[in-house]
Structures are given as C-alpha cells and as structure tokens.
Image 1 (tube, each protein chain N blue to C red):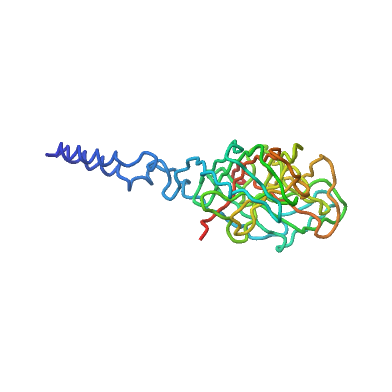
Image 2: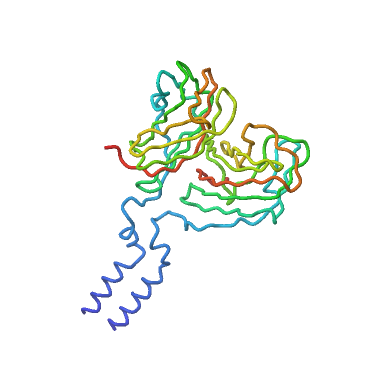
Length: 162
Length: 161
C-alpha cells in the first residue's frame, strides 16, 4: 500500500511542467513569438502610406521578458512608401500591448530610406499602441518602391491595452 | 512506514508549492521603478552646465532584470546647456549601482534642437553614464531648451561600495 502511495505521489510531483518549476512565480514563459502577419499593422502618418507585405518581413519576433517588459526584434526589407511623404512610419506593438502612462521609451533603428542607409529614431509615446519610426533628422521618409528597410531591437516597458 | 516517510519527503520537495525553494532569492518578478527626480543626477563636464528640470523628464525608469542586470529608459527634452560648452554630459546611474564593466552604444540626441544620433559610454566601476555627440570631442551647444537625450540601455551593474 505504501509503495503504491509512493508511486502516486512521485507521479503527481513530476507532472508539474519543468518550465514552471524553473521560473520565479509570476514570470511569463519567456519564449520568442512571431506575431501573425497583418498588413494593417504597418501604417504611416498623414497621407503617407507604408506597404509591408508578408514577404518583406525578414524578422518580427517578440518575447515577454517579464509581465511588463517586452523585447521586440524586427527587420523589414523591401517595403514601399507612397502617398504624400511625411515623417512617421508606424508599427503596431504586438501582443496587445501599449506603453504605460507617461512613458516614452526611445531607441535607435537602422533604416534604408529609398536606398539611403542611415539611423532611424524609434519612439513609443505614452499609452501608444504603435511604434513611431522617424528618420534620424526627423525629415520626411522618401517615397520608394520596395526600397525602404527598417531593422531594430527594442526593450521597453509595456502594459495590456484595456 | 519508511516508504510512507519517503513519499512524504518527496511530495514536499517536488510539489508545486516548493518552487520558491528552487528559485534564487533575487529572482522575484522584476518591476519598473521611477527614481526620485534629482537635478544633480545630470551634470556637464568642465565648466559646462547641464540643467534638467523635473518637467523635462518624459521618462525615467529602471528595472533590475536580475540582481546584476539593469535596464534604464531615459527620455529628456528641452534641457538647457550653459556655462562653457564642453563635450560630455553625465547621467547618474540610479539605485546606488555602478557599471561593472565598460559598455557603450548609440543614443538619440538633439543638440541645439537638431535631432541626431549620439553615443553613450559606461566605464568599469563608473557611477555615471557619459553622453557624447556622434563625433568625439564635439561640444554641446549652449542654449535654453535645446538639448534632448533618449535611450534604453542595458547594463551589468553592481552595488556601489
């Protein structure tokens, strides 16, 4: 009887997922995720248009490092900018997240603006659900056909969009 | 009876409730913290003055991702440069930490209101992060509400002695 009890206890104990045993309580699973492609996740300000096709996405991955910290890696190639040139390319933050109140994280990204290599400014405004991508000097993005690229890695504080 | 004792010991040591026993003491869920504003955390080198008012701070947050890994988000706008222009702005690392080793990279800046990229440098055992313009040795430009600094930096840190 006691041997049977021992067997049951051991089986139950080992049934706990190994990953859960290795994480502090409350931490997310910390796995990299590829968001489902949606053309509507890529827009622009004013009357400028930014067209990103599924095939343009070299990398788009995120990980919830903590419940409020996202690491987001993206590399978009051969995208198209059209319409009336303006200053912001906009990428929807994945996983239904936004920047918390009063929080404006910013970092750098690499750009190819109609063939010209440079540095872009990546900014997420307070409560924003999109990342704004500016050229280094805040000038307009150039119109291009399959000749605008953006790549970067961003670590920032997030919260759920209510 | 001894099998029952063994079973109880195993159950206690392997059950979900025992997770905390297998996690390092510092491995609690990290949280973001806003440091108390202190004008003295922002200083120019030499005779240059860097004046950052509380209202200039759009974002100032840090998180101890691990006991020795700090992520800092800083976004400042409309800060003032005065005195004798020089090449270095310094930012005090929060939470009584200092950099464990040399670490550098790119940041976003505006000098004389012109947006550009710049550089940061943390030095081994340094308690501040050094903020440069893109070209080494270039002085920051004097003026009111002309300087902007933005970055997200990950540092390996240790307690200040």
